[in-house]
Length: 192
Image 1 (cartoon, rainbow, N blue to C red):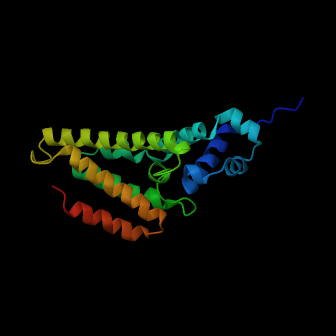
Image 2 (cartoon, one colour):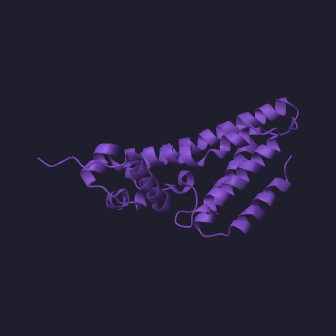
Image 3 (cartoon, helix red, strand yellow):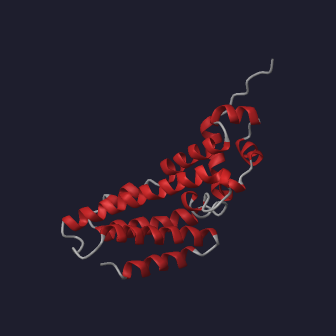
């Protein structure tokens, strides 16, 4: 009987996360994931399950480790400060690591095969949760008099998240951080 190989599950998950972040769900082969984790296929499968399960765990780790600026943004005194902090930190995250630019939540799988549909749906839900949180923050700002009553909080949240998603796409394509920061500045120039 073979000896069970022990490994650091957290480190393996971090490595798997980087592969998904760089290649997306469908672009990452199970062999890529095995190589990055540095463990045998059966051990990786035993620890994380199939590729979809592994991606979901990687997405949760991504949210936990890299999206901590969102609660900070949502807690700032004004809606504009919240949006500015979120967008500038989005630029920072999406351009911080040259080996995996962009956003896992956006670039993970925008379109894909039928096999990737559950992951695509999980990412839609992931992004919708962010939009919901900003809509609620903008509703609160409106009730506090920080935003005019003529502003649609849902449309404003959609606008802010659309800018953030565009930043992710542009960062993945290699757009310079300074250019993306200028995009944020332009977006905020029209703040209600």
